[in-house]
Amino acid sequence: MELKDRLAELRRLRGYSLRELRERIERATGERMAISYLSSLERLGGTPSVESLTRIAAGYGLTVQDLLEPVDFSGNQTDSRYPQSLLDFVDDRKLGPDWLETLSRIEYRGNRPDSEDEWNAIYSVLKLLSNRRTE
Image: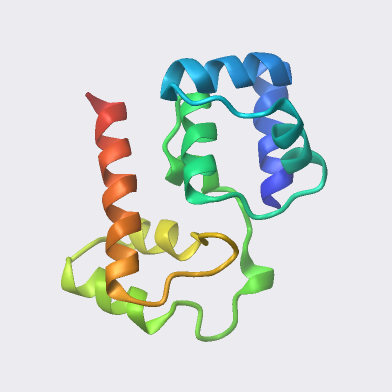
């Protein structure tokens, strides 16, 4: 399943209009997203930022990991599926396969992180946000 299909499916399954989703995102995060942006993600696809994915997930009451779980990114992956910097980062921190999968799907402004510092920054934000959801 492509990300655009996942986003459309989630909204349809929950019975939210785009306006309702935007309001839920704003209540959950304090940030406002344009309805036109949410619509274009569902219709045209694209690669939203980590921040946008985090906000959308929060609007559904999900973690980014849960939001991306059914998304198939295999068309973009080669035999060397994971960057070495990510493998090193996950190994150094003794993170499990779920984190490896989640982090491997992240791009920031159309680029995949390529250093352990960049992976750490993204992991820290996702970890903080996922801890907030469980409190």
